[in-house]
Length: 171
Image (cartoon, rainbow, N blue to C red; front, top):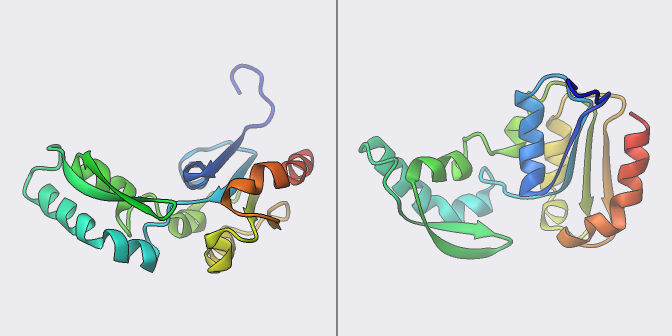
């Protein structure tokens, strides 16, 4: 805005959608938030079942004063689990089921900005009903909208770009 921008909208896709929702909690003066094919749901039961052991291990390391000493912990991305060597404190900031990366909690804390959530109809978060629940937690705004487009997680850009542009023009 200092350089002349009239409106600032934060858009993120997949993990970036999670971060866009978080931006709606921590930044003032935004004109809107777009969560495109949101991903990364550490508060979800599936996520907890897959990474719970690593989350517990990271919590123990942090409580033992070793939060800055990298250890091997499991990561989950698009259903694929792999090992990471990471600092436990950093790992928890990202994977704790009650941490700052839990979309449903952040959606409830957003500052009331217009919010667009756009997701593929065959995206796991859509099929499992998680995305609509996240959207429903956001503060109500007459310009907010939940849209499902055809396809999966990777198809939202191609199949939803016109809808995103239309929504942006309405701000």
